[in-house]
Amino acid sequence: MFDATDLSALDPKYFSIIFTDAFDVTVMSRNTGHYWFIHNPEYPTPGTCIIFHKHKASHPYHQHGRANSLKQAVRSIQSHDRWQMQGRPSKR
Image (cartoon, rainbow, N blue to C red):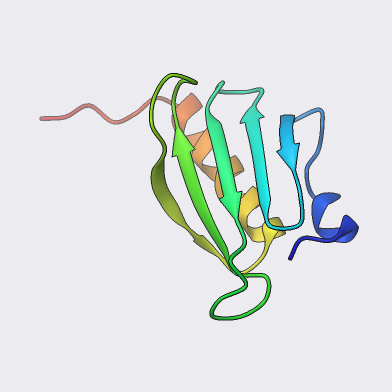
């Protein structure tokens, strides 16, 4: 379950905050325009998060990863943004 302390990890300068409640967070990165849905099922332990991602609002979400806390999920998103903004490696 996300509490006020957890939700304070969401910087409104970095994210456009679309939705938050005790178990779910939806944000859009202001850097990449990518959408992120973070779900806290409280299983196997409280605080565990599943991170979902999509590139455009019209696209479906896909699972991006897991985190042990909302703060860790935010760090993962910021890391992905840095990778995305540096350009994806070319496929050979």
